[in-house]
Image 1 (cartoon, one colour):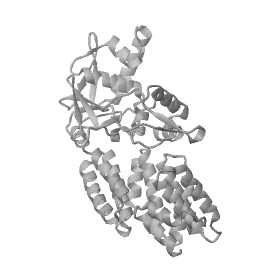
Image 2: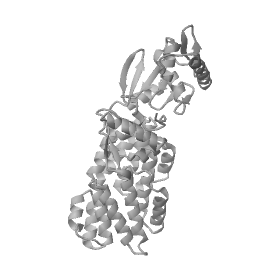
Image 3: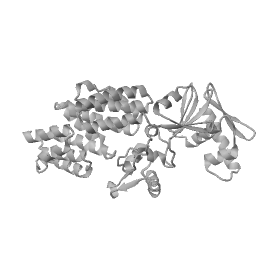
Length: 406
C-alpha cells in the first residue's frame, strides 16, 4: 500500500472520513475503491458504498484473497447497518476463515463481531453470548475492544442484568476513549442512555408507574407474580411460563391479572380475549377450554378459579400480582419496537427478526404508514422503513421473544 492509501486508511480508522476522501476521491484502483466504499458507508450513503465495494472486490487479482475478504466484511457491515438481514452468513464466514488463515486476526475478529451483532439484533441471545465468550478482547485494538464490551452490554440488558451492563459499558467507554473515534463514543453513550430511561410500565391496583431497566430487574426478583406483556411470559417465585406462542392464553392471563384480586365477568373476559361484542354458547365453551389449558400451564404458579360471575386469579406463593407492559402500547407495537432504533429496515429484515411472514409485516407497515407513524424510502427491493425514536422510550424489552404480529 502506497503512502497516500496508508494515510487514507489511517484516517478512516480514526473516524476522519473527509480526510480519507480528500486523499483518494479521484483514484479508481482497487484499494482506493475499497477505502472510498468504506468512507461512503460512514457518511450513510449505503447504495454508493455497496457499488464501490463490489467494484473493488472484482478489481482485486486472484492472488489478493485477503483484500477480497476484507471487502466482503465491509459489505456485511454495510448490510447490517442498512438492516439487510438477508445477507449470506456463509459468505461472511468464508471471508472470516480466509482472514484467519492468511494472518489478519483483527479483520477476522471484526467479521465475528458482525455475526454476533446480527444474532443480537434478531434476539438469538444464547448464540450471541456463547460467541462473545469465545473471543478475547484484550488482544484486539481499542475500537474492537469497545465493540466487544458494547455487545456484552447489549446481551446483559436483554438478560435484565443491569449491573453487568453497567460494568461492560464502563469498559467500552475506556476502550472507545483509547480509540478516539467519535461515532463509537456516541454509540456507547446511546446504549448507556437506555439504562436511564423508562423501559416498561407497571400496572397494579389500577395505577401505572414507569420503570427503568434496573427496576424491572428488581421487580422480577421480588417474588411477585408478574405477567410480562413485554416478553409475553408469566413469572413467579418458582418458575417462568412462556406464552409468546399462545396469544389467546396470554390475553386471558393479562385480563385476569389486571383485575386481581377481584374476579372478572365471563362476558368481559370473552370480549377482551376474542374481540366479540356479543357472546354465545360457542364462545363460552371456547373460553372454558382455554381456561383449562391455562390452568395446566400455570400449575404450581397460580390458579384460575371459577366464580359466580366469571373467573379470578389466585397466585400461589406470591403475595401480589402485577402486570408489566410496554411504555407505549400500539396494535403494531412489535414492528414499531424494531423501527424505534432509527435505522432503515426492509420488510424482509423485519419479518426475519420478528419470526413472521413478510406479508404480515407489510400489512402492519402499511397501517403504520397510514397513521403517519412510519415512513418509507426507495422502491421495490430497495424500499426501507424508518421512524424516529419515541422520546424517552427504550425498546430493549420489546426485542426478544416477540408475539406473532396480527
